[in-house]
Structures are given as structure tokens and as C-alpha cells.
Image (tube, rainbow, N blue to C red; front, top):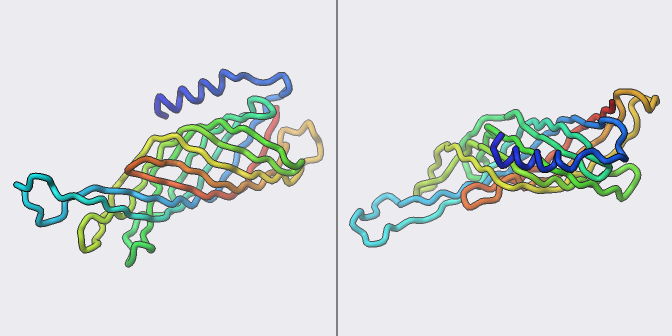
Length: 214
């Protein structure tokens, strides 16, 4: 975990547990993650003269999609905020497609730490707004010649990320309110994981979550 991520986590923990939360409440879940990545590379086309006063360079952008299984664990700081850590396990290898639309990216590394404000428009729905830091490392085809050929290249970014999650509360798995296993939730969401000049990564996720209480 980077120093910036650690500072984010410590700042979140400094909020403390609200008196409204009498127990230690946390949750854990797993989601299918589909990540869209875009990598921009600046290169000098073959045939450029070394003695040219201004090198001829151009930016080439390559898009790809990759999937992964994403796990997350969160702790409720109070009724309105939670602190959450996410990480992924790569689901497929990078591959150069016949066309750019067929390119496959490999999500080699992804993890992040977030603060999630919560809104409750309905008794059965939580709207969560994750904000924090993400580390993303993807391997994907990068086009770097005028004839459109591609090569696999690893690219990474450590950036601020943000998004929205909809969490549908499907009720108690066990009727006893004092049970260790409390809630069952269906999740879906969208996140911007990286948004800098070289790497852009956006993700759609959907899965299940269990809530626990001590």
C-alpha cells in the first residue's frame, strides 16, 4: 500500500466510531469487475530524421477491456460512512486482437482504499459514493507504429478514484438479529480508477456482499 493510501486510511480512521454504532459492524463481498482501459503512448515514427530541429512525434491511444474478480472488505465508521479496501484477482491474459476492438487487457494489479459516504433513499437501498486512492497496473496491447501493429506493455497509475455503488438489501439471512451473520446485499456500481495523461481505467462491477456484526 502506498504512503498516500495509508494517509487516506488513517484520516478515515480518525473519524472514529459514532456512538450510534454500538457494535463492530463490517462487511465483505466479491464482485465481477469489467475494466475498460485506455493507454496513450507518444512515439517517433520510423523514418524521422535524427537531425530534424523538432522531432516528429505523435500520440497513439489504445483501448482494451479486461475482467477480474474483485474482493472488498469494509468497516462502518458510523451510520453515514464506511472505510473500505478493495483488491482484485486477474481473470484473463492480455491478448492482441485482430482489430482494436478485440484487444484484451490483463488487470495485473489493482487495490485501493476508500471512504464511502452513504445515502438511503429507500429502506432497501444504499447509495454509496466511494472516494479514495487506487493503484492500477494493466498489461495491454499498445499501438506504436504507423501501420497499426501492437505490442504488449505494462502500464500503471496511482491516482484518486471515485464512483457510485448501488447496494440492494435483500433482507436477513438469519432471523435472529443478534446473529453474527447479519445481512445479504446485491451490489452494482461504476468507478473511475485512473484518470491521468497516460492511463485511464474505468470499471463496472456487480456481485454479492455479506454483513457481519460483533
